[in-house]
Image (cartoon, rainbow, N blue to C red; front, side, top):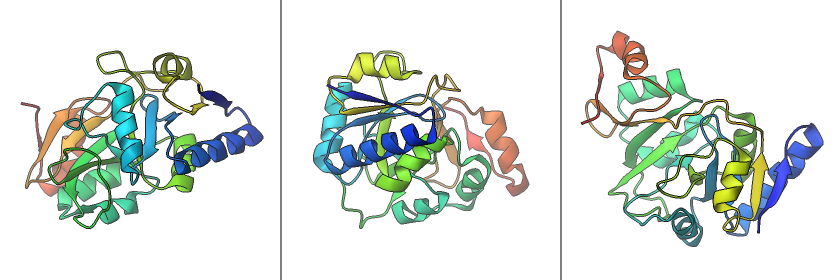
Length: 219
């Protein structure tokens, strides 16, 4: 059964962040707010916790979760061979609703599922999420809903779907955005949109225009 942690003042926020970090260190799942929708989170470097996350959502290893980070610089600790256009997207849209699928550092000691040598990384634009990530390090985070159900845009919705599976629900009020992040594959010479979300292709291409680069539309 989960415990709800409000974040309406500094004392509540500190208690919520500490409780969330403690739960992650224990290998438990938590629900956190992000700038898009609420997410269910696990320690990215704890394979058992990641398996629990996938099980809670009703997913298999073929759908590995993205990893959220507290700093754009962390991408170089998780990914290799990042092309110049990808760095431009990071500079323009992080923190924000953009997830980049990158070639993974081979030295990473984790198991996110069947990633085929890639890792999906995002830096959320949400102060509560960043405060938690600064305490925990990278978190495997997927939208806080059961597979096939609408993404949770409130702590209530997340708690209703996943409350039995998580130990802490950090409540920062309704999501400011109602859309998930846009996902771009940056493992090749040209970016490829895998999922359209809060950022449009036009927004991405305007940012890349000075480089003479573009991203391809979803197939």
